[in-house]
Amino acid sequence: MKQIKLQLNHSKSAELLERSKKVLAGGVSSEFRKFNHPHALFYDHSEGVYTYDVDGNKYLDFTLSQGPMIVGHSHPHVLKRVHEYSEKGQLFAGQHILEIELAEKLNKHIPSAELMRFCLDGSTAIQTALRVARAKTGKNKFIRFEGHYHGWLDNVSWGLTLDLERMGTKENPNSLPWTDGIANEIDNEFIILPWNDLELVKKTMLEYHNVIAAIITEPIMCNSGCILPEEGFLQGLRDLCTTYNSALIFDEVITGFRTGLGGAQKYYDVTPDLSIFAKALASGYPISAIVGKKEWMHLIAEGKVIHAGTMNSACALIAAALGTIEVLEEEGTHERIFALGHRLMDGLRRVAEETGQNLLVQGLGPMLHTGFANVKSVKDFRETTAYEQPKSKMFIYGMQQRGIRIIGRGLWYISAVHEEKHIDHAIKIAKETLLELN
Image: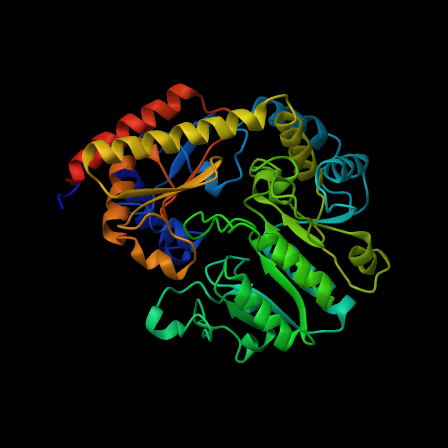
């Protein structure tokens, strides 16, 4: 495999990284910002579908800041909403009118959103949902799935390490910690299973239902290969939770507002008991929501389950979320996002065939994944070992060197402001990069 030629200059980023390392641990504020070939990059500004780094390089952006910028960078309506409301105040430590208006919109669009609370990020909202599930059911464990990301806190930082020898069999999987420093024996809180295997979940629930408070899942396995649920899998989880008095929790941090205003639960017509929304909710402002049915959320409403946070529902955050949803409510927005995503997927498959490359393209359209593998599809976390990681990373690096920005694990996002010309340009650049890999 050939090496990608260096086409962009990143000297200022390199200098800033060395300066940053003197005061920031590793030079970054999130671990995954390190892995941006040839090193962590520093950015100057973004607008619409473009991001610019400190060296003046321009990137057509399909990372969308790891997902939140669903209406593009610096959308004028969102910024106007934030500016006008921030002039009235930044944080009241009390309720305000836009908070109600935002909740009413979520209630209108999301099937499970009978009641809700706002948080700052997905990690805290996930923990709130697990707390509610335990309180209502009187049970302590939850089922989660390999390769699904539910935040970086200790009790969910498992099942993200791809090591087949240590993972055990699918029928009897081992829980592998994601990082050093996790509290001892915290893996007693959950049972981990491979995804998309309904029979195995049925068997596990039959044996352990008396201790299972919840099943938590990404409705689409976006964080590891953008894998869609097998037909009947989500409904099967719904039926099991109903039968055994366990909460079905959808982690819609990525799928929320991206698959539609009602999330993946509306797209697949499967209504969970509790759901988490974040990323695409507020165009980069830190806000999340735990939403759910009244029969579960009443525990928060009555104060039996404590949920709190000084910065929750700060004025700018709520205004940004309202502005974002108002843009997404415009007629035809999601239909166009889906169409652009399908255009990109079809185009990438076409140029892969033309160049003789084993590029596997998977996803729903609004989000998709690319990687190199000699298989027709990848259906769970363990099957992602089929991907040729060095080649996949080289492809992403080659795209970046030609001004196309993709998330390092091969994930692409489509925004409401991408156009056909942007998609076609990305396909053209992909072909150039694939040819260089020959």
